[in-house]
Image (tube, rainbow, N blue to C red):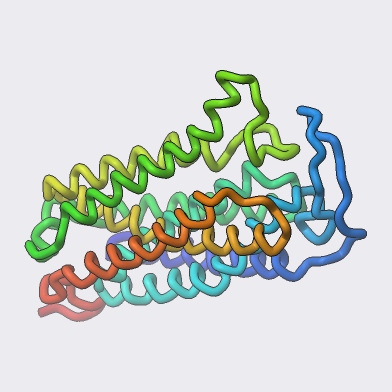
Length: 297
């Protein structure tokens, strides 16, 4: 794997600091508990009042703790395993690594810019930065022109690519459905609470969903970059959709009102994404994977 030392060092940094951030996020509990404030928009917002997330809303903390649990139990182990497989020369490992690094990058960009300021801010910045450079180096390490030949012709590109496009349109419509009334009616965005803007929706509409549409189109056309981008989007989406499913459960348990679309859509997308990932990894030609480090055929 190209840039293996740099990627390994950055990945270790991500593992160590995200482990710290997750444990503090899940288990810190000092404080007097919930209370209410008035937002800039005149809405009554219930504040969590405990732990590292004491200044965040109950709704967002329910999501954040659920995401911390998923990152701890799924994200960190997957990152470690995929790095190990990558260093052994596995193409499947490198695809998993790229997708998992994409998840960490997305997650800690949102933590850096969405959460109310807390004592973990620099930790979030370190993880975000390490994830960005590790993800960039991992993507640069692929030989794009040869990548298409490393996938079986049996890979159902129309199904996978079509689902990526459908997923993007569905999520995009859901987010736009929340935003449109703020433009046409001057309403307050649902879920804004006491925050200043819609960070997640901005990231999704600006980066993730367009990338997924492009990936789907390129994959359907069997373009080499389509295989890589689709693999990254799907693997990243599995970890994120798992976190979103956990967020829905966490918010429901916290008494936060959830839309039917949120309750049904994210778990369903997660299941289909897992199936797509299995199809992709199954159709990697193992015989064409690079030889393990230190071994030459």
